Length: 189
Image 1: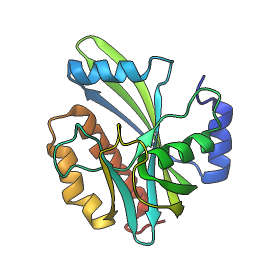
Image 2: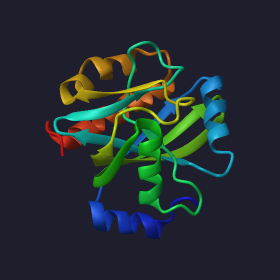
Image 3: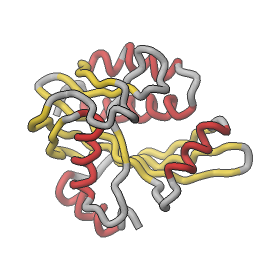
């Protein structure tokens, strides 16, 4: 198992009890097949990171995204890997940044569906502080680019880009981003 209830309890004690969100997402066959591929070892989660430095948040762009579409980085904790180690690894791979988790913002339960098949997934969304490194993706096969964005950009043109993309997965990321920004309360943590 990737993330046990014991681990979640420890995270909540250390980083606060997250806001719970439940949602559903209808995917295309291509997106659903990609999701199933990511679950090949039993994974059914991601850790999404709102990494701040001063008044900006790190965002990434994947090669498959439409031009100008960026979002906060995310990835999975490996089996047997400590949660915080996995979050730091994913942050480094996708952004080149070293981080410290700050606050557990959201626990999002989502049912991804295609035709008559549904997959239950959980996104764990954290606020984190950049503590070192340089904003430059290390995993350049998975990540096409990274940059700093203001909260205003995340709430306006970057959110609109996710919402307007012809991708249910990016639509889900838009919903997740909007909910996380509500937890910020208008300021970087």
